[in-house]
View 1 (spheres, helix red, strand yellow):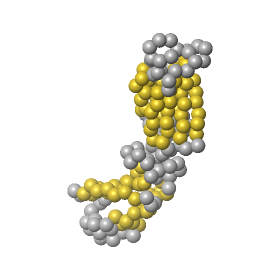
View 2 (tube, rainbow, N blue to C red):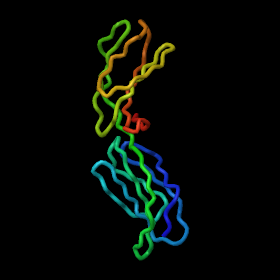
View 3 (cartoon, rainbow, N blue to C red):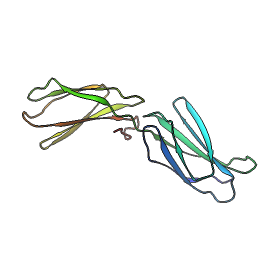
View 4 (tube, rainbow, N blue to C red):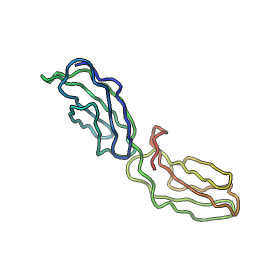
Length: 164
């Protein structure tokens, strides 16, 4: 069979992704979907041009291959793409050691993988952020008496896929 085209990853979550692709010309019996990442190497067959991969680990780079297979078991060329799953959200974000110009933030390491955390703080006309690999961060340069909102987001190794 001919190779599938336009293999696309969407609906990326911490433990699942959706795959879609275009039907190749000619005949085929089914598609084999294979995914690898970390220590995982799994596959499944489907007759549809879409498949939802579940049971994935947060923050891991997975490679997905889709292959059209003929009725006699002859496989065509695989079409490949890759994507990171979203990292899990941090928990127990705590503010301490408040002064007139700084605060200390701590949080729990989320399960799964991540590369770093983005710390964001907003208040008044301020909207700043900084990255850290630690589960704590001291925000400085704040203005006394201003109510600030702090968010911490885990980011995958691609530097783009962020958790909640």
